[in-house]
Amino acid sequence: MFAGTLTRNVETAAAEYTGMIHSTRFDIAIQLEARAKMSARSPDFDVTAVNKSGRKVRIGTAWNETGNTSGNPYISMQIDVGLGPFRVNAVQTNEARAAQSGAFEIIPLVSNGLMKSGSISGELTAMDADNAFTGYIANMMFDLEFMLIENSYKTEETHPDYRIEVSSPRGTPIRVGSAWMAKSSRTGNDYLSLLINTPDGDLRVNAVQNEEQRGGQTFSIIPFIDSGDQAQDAGAGLSLVA
Image (cartoon, rainbow, N blue to C red):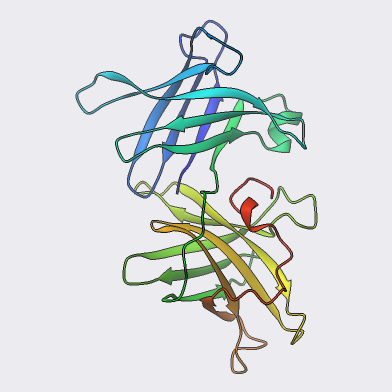
């Protein structure tokens, strides 16, 4: 579960990019410094940070990339802060590109597999304003409070309707998943399909309404059961727009 920001510096700066990366366990200032490339696939940058002793250390590498479908440039990073390696992308919103801004948003990449969701409790409640939801999901190992925020990047039918966010220790919003509005082909009832990056792995669940809840603002989160209703690509759940 990672989030953050990255900003392109002026050409004379020692570091080409500076930014912050957040999780529920840390908030770290990072820099991207250009490095000599040994081949076409060699990293374009070293990712550095300052440790608790005040020493600058290399914590990862980064590459300049271009989206296969969008054609938009982004930065792919592999980072390890001592908890094991993880991958994130730094991307620009449509507004930032239009303004030729140097501002990027850091988003997580979906991991390799989905965890089983048999022992899950949770609830989702529609808020009165901003087309948003608040909720929680928990089992014996974790307990996450989150919000569903409308996905302003949605441009295709399969893109998620909402992004799922939690807060870092400093209160910085961290995107940990995606959610889609859906309708059951069997009952015709509306529900939400969620893909969440939990501390135990990627988790798929549904938020549904029972007979007592139907027509109200509260949904119960239940383990995902593949009924053929899911239209989205689960493998793209944590990407920016997929």
